[in-house]
Image 1 (tube, rainbow, N blue to C red):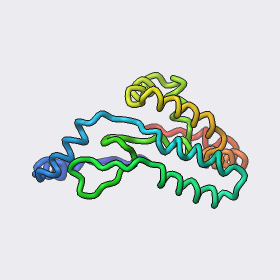
Image 2 (image 1 turned 120 degrees about the vertical axis):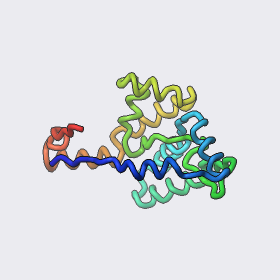
Image 3 (image 1 turned 60 degrees about the vertical axis):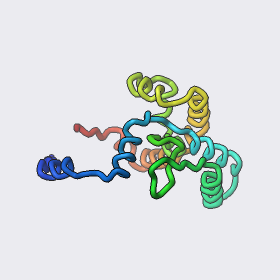
Image 4 (image 1 turned 135 degrees about the vertical axis):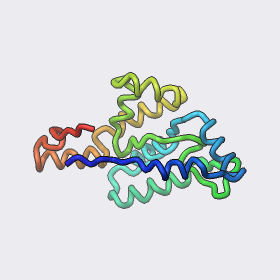
Length: 167
């Protein structure tokens, strides 16, 4: 079944005509003028917590991981915010979810996907790249995503890998 996506031109025109308040304009300007950055703070904390709680029951490990992330993440307060809080210390930041799926990070640190790696390397400080490499090595074979795929393979064979989507 092919689903056709139709662009609502009228809605786009209405959005383009919206007038931003000075406050929102400053937020938008700050977001789009800031460089894109990758933060490894959470990746480092999750790896440390999982190492510290080895052998404990998973619910307890998850609770301790959550506490460590809450206590250890830097608090970022950016100019022009009415409500503060951010997932990273950067205005325009993201974090690799290495503890769920290390594969994209493996591509970045190993250069298996050069275009993605070259684009991402400009967003990662050299010392942070080392943290990503360490976290990637640690999490391989331990993540929920990998455990789910392992279960699918055991139950259904290679059907998951055999499915391809043409977009």
